Image (cartoon, rainbow over all chains, first blue to last red; front, side, top):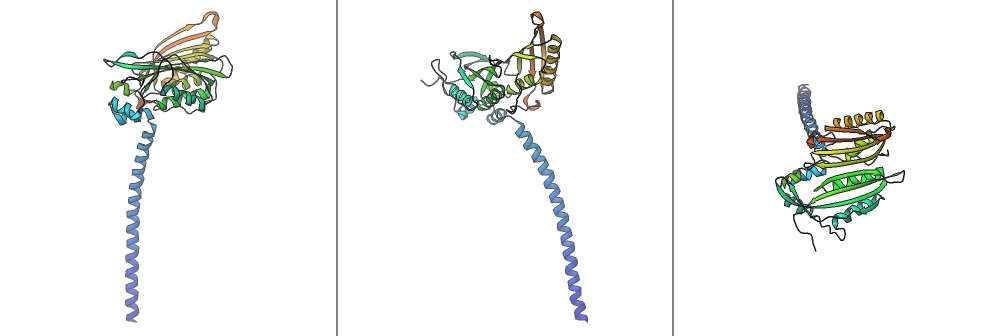
Length: 183
Length: 116
């Protein structure tokens, strides 16, 4: 009888210890889970804020104020010639083609010395005109702005194209061009 | 030169806001957007066709929509077109810093179906 009682006692102690451990682990898990949730919420908020930044803003932040690094990272300086489109013009045409827009490359003026932030920058202006449905035009413009994060939009003009369904958009972009274009 | 990199505002959402805010009773004939001062301010020239009162209401609507998105009107100028055909509006707007913009610099999705 005493032997049975001893076995029962040992089992009871083990059961008690298990319950205590489980309860303790469960409590700890609850604390860890709560910490995780707090961290995850904070992370999600930061992530959402980060995603709220435009590609342009993110790139600018990444390169700080180092213009040369920024431009070389994009490895695309304005190389538009008066006689024909360079990489910028070709990219604008290619994007327009994917959106089914009619395109017209506007005469490209020579580089200009542009008073900027207390100094003189060499700037290449690129003009482009597209015609098509409004929704496609807007999609194209959005893509252009995301594609050329280092370009400045100087002006945008939207007007009816002559056909009821289409609009015409004339876009003037300015590129910081601190190197001579490739000959 | 470094200021060149402070550009962080996309123009496309401004256009979408202006054109989408214009009510149906007016027609946007021409919209010209010109940026200056490192894209911290923008001149918006707008020709609206319709009743002058409707055009004025449309301009108020556009101005309010832009203001709620962080583009505030600094100096407005409004002229009626001859023969009560409509209104020409010229306004200088100021951008808030990008992180305070409602759009956060993101382009508006391409799902706009309305015609200007």
